[in-house]
Image (cartoon, rainbow, N blue to C red; front, top):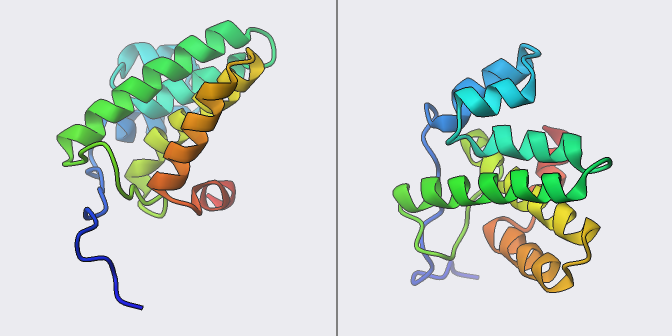
Length: 138
């Protein structure tokens, strides 16, 4: 089967994008709040904050994830994404954006925002149907 020649090219965010410093700081054990404050454009930092807040404060988790989601969309648009098309999870710099989408989906689920859960599931699938499996192995 031939590739769809009309489909948009996959977006691959730059290796030195906003998530690079945040990833290093998180891996070094820096508090996620400090990482987000120092790297406010990092989707990864906000997604991490969302994950840590989800059990105790789903509204805060939603707000953190929403911030990461918007920062991620900004980065994708800057990288050439036009509102649809692949964002491969196999490309490490894309993972923060995808994690923010998935974090927002889980926070939306926690507060009962079903239409948002469905929309974000579709977006994650549009980005990369294998994203969750890839992220689970990363």
